[in-house]
Length: 222
Image (cartoon, rainbow, N blue to C red; front, side, top):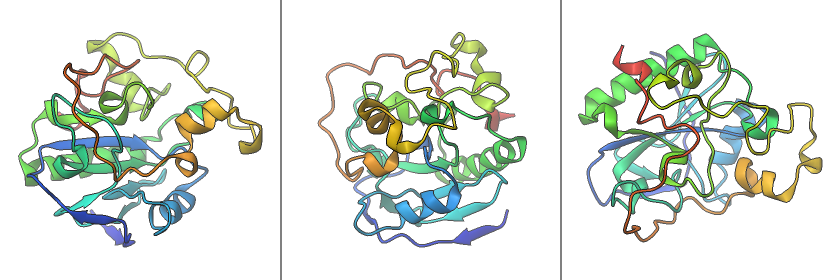
């Protein structure tokens, strides 16, 4: 797999070993807009990898460093998800753009990259989670898209939310300025607070989001 280096300044040292792989969608217009945001030193956000719609993979942060992608949230008692995870941003407009389908070439690239990461860090399939798994109160990504991997692999957890009923499904033609404040907060990286923050672990595991990557048969296990 060819990987382009697009270094981001937004990272710091890990506090624990990697045990999780977190999948996101970018919620922006295209790969360049997302990478520019994730490499902006004033934004306070980053990820280890970005996978474009054409399958091109960019590395922004080395895997041995703590990227700032998870933000406030926790997973099964792990409050500092950034320290314990690798983050992959999948280029997709998200719910604010009607949740476009993930192209097959992009799905294949995410699968290959995920397999390699899981092998390097001995991450179990149960350790592959969605952003919405660790922060169900405020995140929807990477969601479920008709024709995309998340819908095709949803049989284990029931039908996911469709673009017609999912929150913030305003359609791709909607101009960012016309989206509601709630939609901008939920879906747009440019409106997000810093993802560098680690939250205090909650006493109970998070409630199930509309679709859980962790509870579905993962693509990358073949």
